Image (cartoon, rainbow, N blue to C red; front, side, top):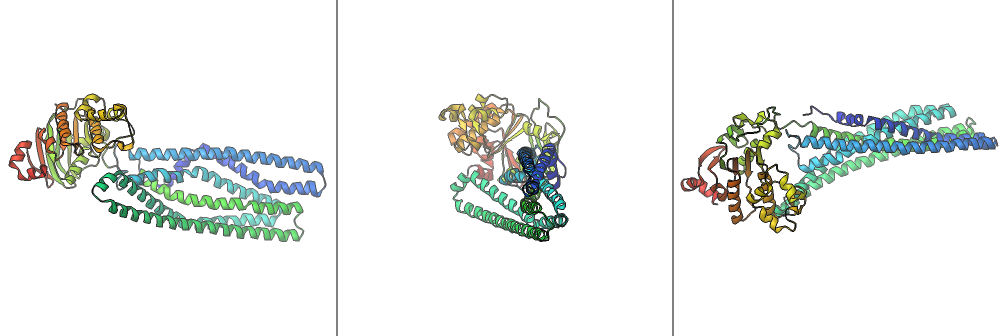
Length: 560
């Protein structure tokens, strides 16, 4: 896992990774700006050496030099901009991959306290802003080169004008930097609010069917409206700061250039400047508008990049949710599962033994089930106690190996874009046909136009809830894991299909450890043993029939 990461390290790391492209862009864009600054100087030389002196040969010679200057500066910009864009795009891609690697890291932790939409915003708009340094830094240095070349040229034309540029530009740039501070402060909250709104929207869209089913549409609209308005207010504040900043840049640039023009005009009236020198001085003064405005624009983008790099650093340096583990899982794991003194959430010291090959049902309230699933899936380390696989602590294994050995199939399992067959085969090396039959998904294939080759849209939205649930169950079964943990795998199917799935599970998983967290009497009826968890501990256990006959609380819970 990565150590502490700061926004500064994200910014400079992005530049270092593309340093050769950035360096090439700097040199080429500086050449472009130097050539641009020389244009008014060469025009002044053409006037003095050719027009004013009446020397046609000199005029043609300097016009040729001017043409070569245009050829030089245009090619420098062409190839410099290409290198800068290359650095920008590759930096954006690299940052996105770093964020994806961190979010998908087996030890987790990056998603804690963040909605998926927030992470998506960080991986898109924030990375784009930081990647803009690949173009912004060369552009900024090129504008500095333009100022230096213009100042040197003015020093040769007129010492007072040259000194005015050299001594006046640094304070102006410092003032522009200070004026960009409010924009930087407001850019972070703007991105945070926008990401929050995006996250809420994604959350609501994912659960739109459920929201409509329970009549919670107005509440969902109210929630998103509030979040969206907060994002709008933050955006307006940031936009107001940006508009104020850009206006201040234009005002300061105008005042500075007016001062340059005033000094140049007085020198011309005093006869201290030639006609060509006056033209060159005025042309340089007009030319300086571009670099100064660009510096202000780039500085605003750098302020936003600093805020975005801090958000990226927060994700990359998020602490892991679970310990690493170094012991490999044996290839022939029997699959004996033991829970000892587990304290996590509402679990107050849960003890549970599941011998290898047993099909056990667990009845628990939703909060306790969620906490137990998180511990079994190694999504988070418990406060006390733990889970053992074949008498070895699950935390001793690398998280990815532990999750493959103790496979937890969540209730809301999502499918990916592809065919039904591809979704099922992604589960593992088992027999897809047997897994489809056990999950009742063979009936799904019969109803689809292209059978197993039917395309599935993202998250399986092209399938009904029951179809999606059965395909996801088949994917979990084809993994043939030593321990399979299923959480309410049949809530979206009818009772006849559920009975068929229960029998299919019992037959396909014979001799393999299987845990069913459910209150479905149909599934619990095929379990070898049922464990009832109440107030964080095991309250009762036995067969489904025995508990129905002798435990009124259990009977009321599963038959409700």
